[in-house]
Each structure stands twice: as C-alpha cells, then as structure tokens.
Image 1 (cartoon, helix red, strand yellow):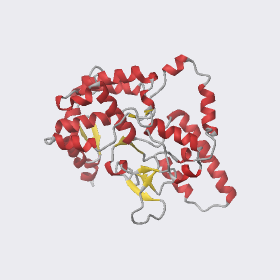
Image 2 (cartoon, rainbow, N blue to C red):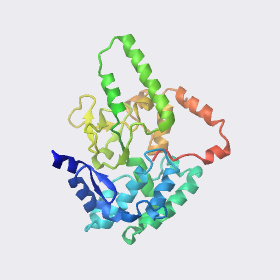
Image 3 (tube, rainbow, N blue to C red):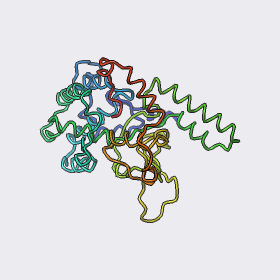
Image 4 (spheres, rainbow, N blue to C red):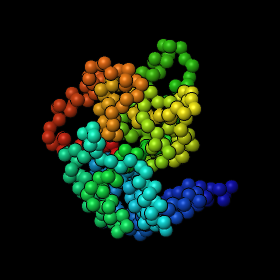
Length: 317
C-alpha cells in the first residue's frame, strides 16, 4: 500500500507525473530539453518568458498550445532519428491559409500581428535548433502555429462534463427533461463567462488518427476521454457500414445547432474549409443569416472601441 502511494505522484525536476513509467517516458521523449531545473521559478528564463507571454494572450488552459509546440521541437531535438519525427509531424495539416477558397486562419488577422511577432521572437530565443530552422523563420512559425490550431484536440476530463452526460442518459418525463436541460444550459453560460471556450478542457494534444477524421455537422463518431487521462477514445454515434467514412464534428454541440451560415463561418475561420456534409447540403437554400446567438455576439462587438479590439485574446489555439 505504501509503495502504491509513493508511485502515484512522482516528480521530475518540479514536474508532476502520475507514475515513474510516465515520468521516464516524458524524459526519454522530450522533457530533458524542456526541463528548467533550478530555473523553474526564474521569470527571465526564455521558456518562462514564452509561457508568460502566452498567458497574457489566451484563456486557460494558458500554456497548452504554445507548450505543445515546444514539445514538438523538444521531441525532435532529443530524438536519435530526427527525420522520423519530422516526417511524423509533417502528416498533420499545417496550412495557415487556403488559397483556393481565399481563406486565412482567423489568428492571422491584423489584430494579432503584434502578438504573433512577440511569440515568434520568444519561441526562437527559447528553443531554436538548426535541424528545425524552417520552424523558426516567420512563415514556418505561422505554419507550426496553424498546425496546432487546426489539429490540436482539447483534452477534457472535467467532472461537470461527465455529470452532464449522465444527465443526458436519464429517462425523464418531457417536462422534467426540459427543466433539466434549461438548467444545464444556463449553468454553462454562467460558467463560460469566467472560463471562455475552455470549460471542459485541461490541455491540448495531437492525435494522428483522430486528426485524419473529417468533419460533419451530423457526425457518426465522437471523441471522449473516458479514463480521465490523455488517452483518446473514438466512439460511434450511429451504425457505420463497411467502407463508410468515419466523421467527427469540429464543432461542439451548441455550435452544431446554429445556422448553416454560422457553422460555416466558424469552420472557415478555424479550419479553412467549406462544409458540404449532408446537413449543410440539405440547408443550401437557407438565407445566409447568422444564428440568434451570433447576432447577440455581434451586437456586443459593435459597442467595442478600437482599444478593446487591440486586447483581443487568441482564444482559438
């Protein structure tokens, strides 16, 4: 019993791991490059300066995306077979723009130009490596940034999410179901005022197989983290025939209920494509009007000043 307790939370240079095996795996893959050791609390350490800059630009989980990029660099730096890791990362989509559709990722907008330049300089100062020089030039950094933004999967293990799923499974009379759903909707709205878009998200990860699944507004599979760790599970939502494509949704449940125009706006800005799933095709004749929720958002935005716009947070990476 004492041995189990001892192994439950092992630390490696001020970083907590769930077991000695997990600690060793991290050390072998990337952590030796990123370990700060005695500089863990030094605000002037290049890695800490990078983290702090990202925190000032982004909702929680503050460090997940920028440090995911750092781990990619560290993994290549530590690897004996550097070419293998670079080929592995090249399998993820990394385009920051879709020239054919004349789309650019929303985070490349003018309002983020200064923030991206700062992050690029700090990233280069903290992690530059000759073998990865293409990731450290401005265009390469934007490509890497877009790779994480487009392919990164939020890792959510919150107890609230599990409770909501349990509520969804309850067999209730129609009136009670309506009351419960209304309560949950309001609860999410109240909490999201403090958390932004990351209520059920403790981190971000790259999963090669999951990232190859295309989007549908009526998905036949969904992503979950049933073991409350970083292990991703892909579960079916309906029967899937042999040869049928497995599709997940890049939109959350609430976003999927918005108008076709609103869904397309989110997908264009964040994933650089125009959706042509069954639902979108069936709604082709709809007017290009936004959902009520988006109209509310735009109404609030109209009251912002130029100074407010300058404070925009990079909440989608």
